[in-house]
Length: 457
Image (tube, rainbow, N blue to C red; front, side, top):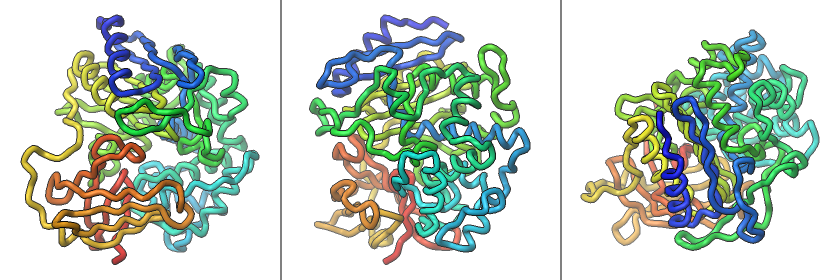
């Protein structure tokens, strides 16, 4: 498969400038060859240029690393995916005693545990940080009943602690010994003292359409956030090598068996769907992976973000194409959408669906059934009618209070149950999906950012 390196380098440079992205690193596997392209700077203040060896914070793409480690343990017989978490890790508990008894490892992997998503809690830098984090979540209310899809970072920190309990290693050490070393991922690290060995990107934030500025902290997220995506740094090529192992049925390029073929297939098997098909542009979810159906062409991948850093991963198995794009601010999602749309079309014949947003002819929708107050841990969403238009107030409360100013915008209907909120740079520079649904037990809910919030008033 011919890859026109000069063309794609020029296109990356052009799109990076257009969307005010300070720096970008792109890895493309096509025709069995890994191509590495870079553009821009790691930090606008220092002017240090991006190289293929530069590391970025990859955010929630880390969930694939954690899920892979869990699947290794399952394949070895160390755990059963449908086992109750409480049976494997007796100290596990939630604010709901019945949920504590019933939540399974499979539910943690597939985001159907009902656990809160965004409980960011600093338990220190010690090797006991995940044990202390699991202790801390005992009093955190669930966002939804177990069995309900709701994107869940907390569940992946619980999985990280499960890995520690079963291996006797820290999550960081298990990641290195059981995944990074066998795959040769020499530029995948989790601790700041290891990141110092590399040219590392810093995040940038700013108003849409303007050059962003470096954030005041390299990474404010605690070590306990590691298994769900708060601390891992990697090159784009390392992420591509991890994905290639999944593409190749669980083997490393040298033939080392890292994961069984059966475990690889299980991760890519549909587990659950979600009313929000736009935040990740995905159709379903497997065990860790977001799953795609591009007009009959299947794929899998994941997105990630920290403070001003963004990562995107897409895999097309039938054509053997892998795309990884890591960036450090600006209009990252717009750059990714434009570049991946062109790359997937040329290299894999994939036609991505249009970006989410209002239709040219807006549907007439009765907002009355959706008016009310919705709550999940740390966030209250209020839907009202203002000047005849549906209006959203999204504010952080309780332990998340002060995390960011409230988002207050009018909503634009997209379908009978989905609305678009205009992005403002802090949450999303594109249109933000707001999808209303009903749980099997009849309770009303809203999905924003793939997270469910139940109607309370």
